[in-house]
Image (cartoon, rainbow, N blue to C red; front, side, top):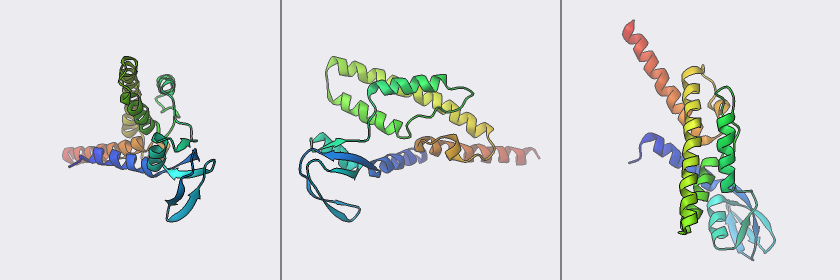
Length: 182
């Protein structure tokens, strides 16, 4: 059984997989059913598909992803932006950064060359650093902000989940301690 935070993160991943992304058909796909609608997709058509389907078709050379996927260098850029953001505020980075970082790392992991293995380790380190920086800021927000809307703290779904869980636990703990000492 999944622990509560793990279950929420799994749901965030499912949300990303079912969100739409723009694609360009590189071949005739025939009839594709999207949201109960049957669409005849021909080579050259630009069509919005659920991410899970777009990724599978992309892996097999049937579509090109039109919504720009980040490159591994973008992760280094996001780390720098987060590290230099002022005042304990979360930097404004892609709301799907964790999901896309996973895609980048998974793609590189399939290539077993020494260069790719080294790059994967570097990218995992960068993602961990981004997580650590942002985690500290989310924890501080949960500790210090008065009932602020989670969406005002972060636009990243995984961080919104963390903020809400932390806020609820911290507020409950504080109320319990206050009742205890009264």
